[in-house]
Image 1: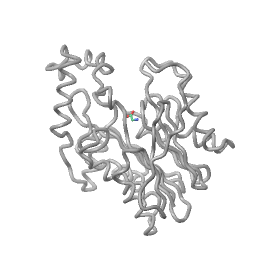
Image 2: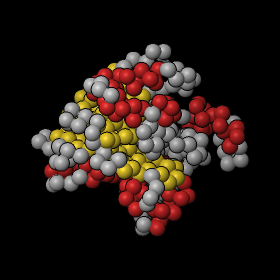
Image 3: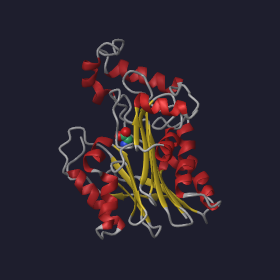
Image 4: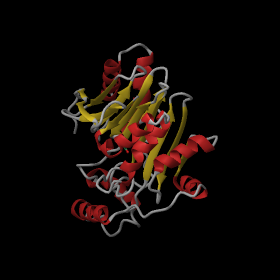
Length: 311
Ligand code: GLY
């Protein structure tokens, strides 16, 4: 039994492992691990206190996948609900669909009785104002009227520190079943309605008991274009070892012509419980914890240098 997560999953990994110790499923563990991250006011890339879009709304994306059945659920651009991972799980379990977005996702959450919450904290609101004022004064104050011109400012207004962080959780339960989950507030100062890779099954998240699981953080547009999570699992299916499968998927990213190319990271888990993580940035880390461990270990990601320097 093991849980593997991106580093910001530290606030939830013990809860996830505890679920596994009590005989819970990998899907239960992934959800239990992500919920505390979504509630963490210190994390401005996920859930409550996530950085907003260009017009000051916090739009959240999440997905979950069960490697036993290949069932999946996702929500995108959902506002006013603190735990999109739980709503994504309900999409997977209650609907004949995989993916709800925007007002449809909000309607579904309301029907199921999920509580609403104002997700924009004072801290996030202050930074949002500050960055717009400093970097896009032409837009600041006119944002509701001039979405067309705002589009030009998406790149320069993104907080350079945290444009597309996210949380990843992978788990394997006592029966050997694998699941994966991802949750994010996406690219800070994004164009309203923008979806990254996190809610897109195959791009930011994929699990298949037979071959393994993978999940991504970083510039989601790149993972969408290369289907990165599914690629890692598919490369394992085709016979590559875990580390080589990740490297191959990252080499795929190098082929992209992308003036906004940025950091890309992935965590991956094989059916035998072995794991690895990858980054195109040096010195990146991830965490893991088994049922026998008292606390998580932080381990180095495999550095896969990009073929071209990142802009
Ligand atoms: N990887 C998260 C995002 O691009 O939104």
